[in-house]
Length: 310
Ligand code: OXD
Image (cartoon, rainbow, N blue to C red):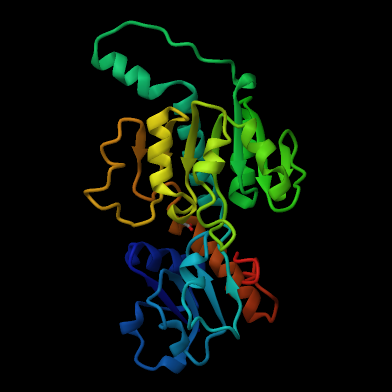
């Protein structure tokens, strides 16, 4: 079985080793150049493949995303439509994301930026921090990643709510659903965490109106996609104090251009799209399990529903 591994962002050697352990029967080819006969490729495991690349393999049985999001595949107008595209739900990816969300939310909650400033000024001063149960955190998107992050935040004793297309039953999390309840969800949310998939409906959803509906002085954590956020609106709302601080891992343009105003903004924390980097140690096994299922004639999961966009 030939697997094409296509990603410019990942260390191929680590993946080669991880696949050798998880799926020793596979012949892993790193990059399109390593395939001399396109008819050989059975599976493509990919992150941001060049547009049009995957349609070149006539015997492809499935495309497996190397990331949780699939917008990097959906944006290919020539993506093969006759094979399943499989999203990655992987424990290591989920742990990484939940850790990042906890780090960012706790940082805002415990006023890390202001304490840094006080330290820089050698000032011994206590700032008020509400008790966890009085801090209202809201998670947009309650898929695998959002639900895990919401549970972990609730375990930290924050008052957590989630917003998603359909209402979700998650212990300890208040669930808001659909456009009708977005306003109510935003009005109660002091720290907003975005974990939505990027679709036509969610592009630009974090804008002056939605961010303006948060309580004044709210914080934003964007770990989903840069396309969710209208960046100029965030700058404006930081200027008015409507948004106090933001932690951003994803951007409209990546890498974030050196001249971008976010870099020098004193109330923005930037990380380079690293909140949850797919770990070969766990993800190769997850992908291998799906490939084995397909080799047995069973369906992989979860299969992307492109009518929903995820
Ligand atoms: C992902 C990502 O989709 O890293 O997994 O952005």
